[in-house]
Image (cartoon, rainbow, N blue to C red):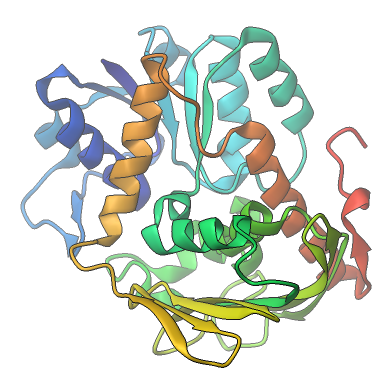
Length: 350
């Protein structure tokens, strides 16, 4: 199988490792590279003395046109957020199946054209929301669908992690997450929790967000965002709260669902799920022994390969990936304009 990579940074190399694990010698790797950094990464950081291009036999192209001329079976778009859609448009015009890292884009420019192209050509398109494959979140989703929580009262998410700790091998000020011109900022970079909200409940009606650049980090984007969402839909009427920041030590990543019949909270860093009944008794507990963080990415890649072979459909297609982007852009607009923003105001068709 011939796979083209657009971006071979941390997440790109993770996908490459997992593809190599699943496909072995059947994988032929091509890459469209701009910066051309040769460092090879592992879970713990840089692998000394290694070379990502040499060690994986990467065939490097210096233009996207040249890369697409090799007729890849699929492309993994893992470059900075602001460059996602321009690259995806070129790949879609060439009729190539697309795996795109989250978020779908940094704004709505070109998204309607991309959606139309993907639909017209019947292309496979998957967005990389790996937490859709976390066993604890899958269990929460099943409990929700069964009505286990009774009447829903609220949901709360929190994600906080110190930005300079993300990639210790590079200057945090140059990372995409730190730069406005690359589509960074805490709201779009930590968009997984917004995808969880859309996955569990659907889009809220409106959002109000407060925060901004509140720390001493040397970045030109927001590092803190606290959002209150108004949900009214099939599951009832209740508030959803989400806090995101680039600051906390130790890191935190939790999600909680509160109903009048049960409460559940998951710690995604400790891989710990606790479920309580209406009397506050612990009725379910799981620490997911044997589960590792990369297992989500492997499952996600395996699903994409299955879809390429004509079996099944992606957990997060383009239309689903668009919903979390709309929520993130509504939060950004609320933060910038200091007002409540209805989700209906953020529409790819204007």
